[in-house]
Length: 225
Ligand code: 5RP
Ligand code: ZN
Ligand code: CA
Ligand code: ZN
Image (cartoon, rainbow, N blue to C red; front, side, top):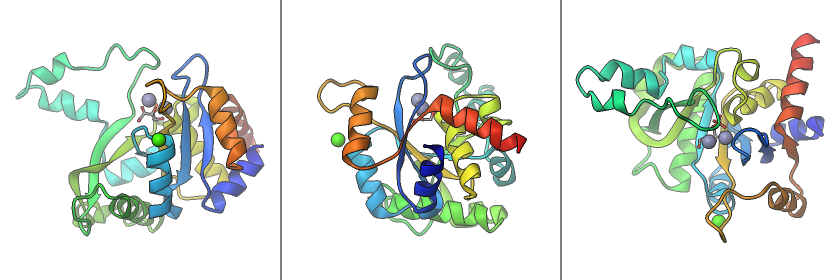
């Protein structure tokens, strides 16, 4: 199944990844940022419906110089003490949030349209692929409408979120380790889409459905080989 997922990602297709019953219990749509299109964005917005985010590998995050949002809050708390009070020490499913900054490409208008978001995402992947990280501020502005997620150092070996699983998949597929992920929501009951319904969606649309544990195990094997 993992090989099928890697092939799909290399073909610019969306795959579905359920994290774990002991974590968020959510299925994310995941696609390689370097292949992001406006049509993907429309699909993700309509059929997933969660927050569209861009996981970036720890290495590329470092080269871009983008901080975790929590680090920004810590530094700015001297001037804005409320930021200390807001510290996310009580996330019910994980120890640390992956949120970083938000941004738009400077050539977008509002930044939120499917065309704009897809452009921002694809250009960010291109920047990383070409190792032009020093141009981030020249080409992008913040805040914007694309939320960046910074993968933990050590990726899935350290944190088992969709952020790190997205990066593990990109690495195994031989793609630029910048991805797009978005939680699948249930339009009927206000909850996250159940695993059973996410599987049904995958079957109906001929998409690969993966369990987080399988991604993590495959990645560990990949690192050994
Ligand atoms: C951002 C999130 C999502 O759950 C996304 O899957 C990334 O987070 P995580 O790495 O914690 O799973 O909260 O919308
Ligand atoms: Zn989440
Ligand atoms: Ca919908
Ligand atoms: Zn998640």
